[in-house]
Length: 548
Image 1 (tube, rainbow, N blue to C red):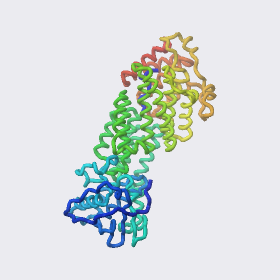
Image 2: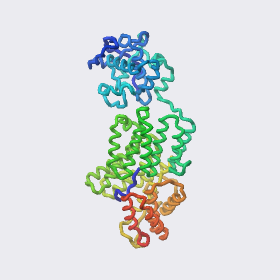
Image 3: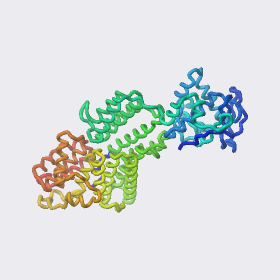
Image 4: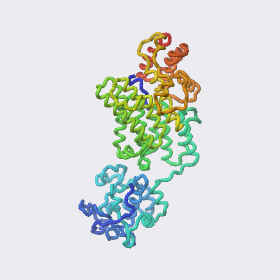
């Protein structure tokens, strides 16, 4: 099989705080603060005394500056370790301040005198000393790496911890909860009802049914019920993913454009994974358009974006989706017959490594729909690479074992295996079919096919509860589900199923039905990309002359 035949797949710091570095005391607000010199004292602790008058290094300090510093430390105790404090939070705290910008400027002058590295903005990969002052007042604000651990707080000379800091800040236990959980969602039961229903429809393959039913309708309903931009953006992202799975890249891009107009990661940096996932969907769209290089470039830019750098290292869903798409991109490169054989072999091996990573990540995060899809792609890719003569490891048994694992995961976890895995199964058990042009019917029917019973023995220890009396029956059942509107498929999937119906009817069924399926397939070719049309026309020529 050639490239045209493949589917366009789709630390928490110490809770105690202290401060030992030397200090020259406070300078008048009008004086220009001296930048802290990089000496050994700056690497020590920051001694903070909460008893009035509050002091740092034994010197009285501005209440606002110390409040901001301790609020930053409290934010660094959050469950995700983001450590963000937003400009709106400071504005709420200092509502009576005539000039919030002056409060922030004085606080940063104090931080510099105390030898603390405090950054701002969303680029946490840059040293705070290198950040542009122009954007400081917009926030968000954060402590540089390792700075939270340097703070050591005392009350009347005795070390204290989190509870005392929360009390001094003038807040309640709610602040501790906010530091751990971030902003709580205000979504109604109706929102989550629409969301959960849409998710179930998506898992079952009911993508786009009508105005009131299907995953797309459910996520649109959730969007209208969203009480804040974050939940609205979440529903929009899912709509883009529905369109991608339905094979409509243009519609997916349109939804992503709407997402860009209404949401920016700076609005809530703790939810920046939204932007990372949107970038992955854009790359999927490029891949679906048969442009793996463009997809690769989009992913490269996303992984280097400072807003998302940590997400591509630690976020399970982002990592899994990224690895799966990287595998597909490298698979396309491996199947490009115009490239050097050595480069193709290395690309194939890289693709398999990415698939294995994506599979482990999906299972670890209990994303079993993603795990099933990845196992399916792994088996299909391994089979393709072997057919192309690429030297790839095959010590895991027959590629069909991965196809069986995908079917078992779908069956076991009720996630709907999707159509592709069954198409792969039907194609692989017949080894792709003969390459002869319009063979005689008797010759065509002698082509060897792995029988269902043989398949079950081959995939042990995986066991499947579903029984297929024949592959022809499986192909016909799939076509019946499509004709009855019970499943939602894109044009490429529909064409592949028609091809399997035509092939198996010609091989051991009714030649007239084979002819009818072939005719339906020809009529659908205009819905496909030029490369896919070439593949299916070639496949039709390899059916018996009375059919193809």
